[in-house]
Image (cartoon, rainbow, N blue to C red; front, side):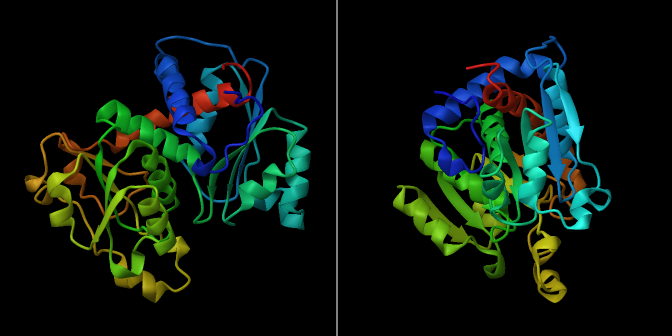
Length: 308
């Protein structure tokens, strides 16, 4: 498997063997991510960070990842003070920044932006989210979290919340198809998973069921993956208000869950997980956030050719 120079755009580009190799590499690097060991395998390398949408965990975990491996960060900063504010095209920005760096992490509100960027870049593009499209590096850390905190083979998972606009669950579904997961989709009718994705998953041999009841969904699952209803994806605020607080995880709800069931969330959360859940053994979302560091370390090391 040759990852050097590879663009990370969509989970559809990865086989089971490739995914497992990335997860195995992340496990090798986890002690470095925890600062128990030191490494300079990316010394002299520069990662350009271009975020056209707000981010905390994705941006900072990528920056941490490159620095833990001895590299440096080139950050676009605010779009308002860049040449983009003057009307520079994404293609021209990518061409210029590729000349300054060894890889580019891109987050953009336009679906398909990362694919477009890859067509103009001389260095690897890592898609950190393109609108309601794909977020593959989040998916890799989600898979790593499931592997470390539960199990991937024979997994029973409920995906809940905003399944219409949630790019994290879209990517995760395709990845889980490699592991034969049993998937329950939990959402209001207005936020259900797009039918083409459901059809695709069923064609891949997965057992997929839909419900709008959290109570029935959590009784028999290994993992509950909760998502925020994304206000920024709604064209109409009135439509957002209709569904904003329809699904919520509380300590009382968890009384019917398996003792070993884990709750994941890509964060940030708003009202969909009660703070009282944080102290339960089910809560796994802060560990999940940390796992983004070793996973993104692995991806950077692989695409920059420091590891094979």
